[in-house]
Length: 106
Length: 106
Image (cartoon, rainbow over the protein chains, first blue to last red):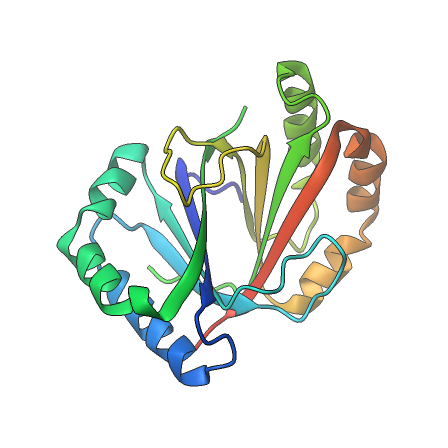
């Protein structure tokens, strides 16, 4: 089934303390709270699977996949008070973030 | 809504000819065919949005997001004849691929 949402926002986090289960749990709890933002259509909070081929990036600690209906909803999410609170409460946990924002191709 | 699938497979492609709309179209068509693999629950074929902050990776040409019900389904997808055909027909188009495989966290 083709995902009909037109904006896919996928964030990968690397922790300051990569081995800390406690810090990962704090981040996951923060993302659960973040999922309350109203423009989020659906979301997935992930950690690396145990697949391991050369092309697979396995070093991140957590992934945050969010589907929005349109680019404008993603923009409003960036400045949503719930998102600003998340950054305030959790940004000390990570030292690197990579974001991929995709719209429908073709 | 929390995505209930337990395996998220996200692939980012960089083209040999980054500016070629024709090559991008070929890749997108290949991904459309690839979406016929039976274990795929849902998928999204993307290209970079026009967002542009420091943490955003914008240099890839296409993204391929696939949701599977479990890790085993992703394994069988890797060796599915439709997937092998896709690699045979399209791999000359790209020179770099990064894959993120995630399972549910928390």
